[in-house]
Image (cartoon, rainbow, N blue to C red):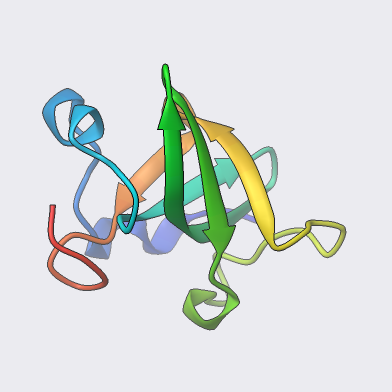
Length: 88
């Protein structure tokens, strides 16, 4: 599964990634799956986020074994929900 629908969203730049915090929505690639998460905490480039299944698309769905909360690195963030799901 790919995240090919990410071209419709804001690309993650260094500046935007540095400003991410609780409440921001990000699209995360995790191996062959991807998902949208609402960031709940950030600690030295490691994010914890609540997966928002309501934002899933046919091209972006998390793996079925995932829990409702995921931990991910900033290099796994492939798109931002700026101006659509949140303001960056």
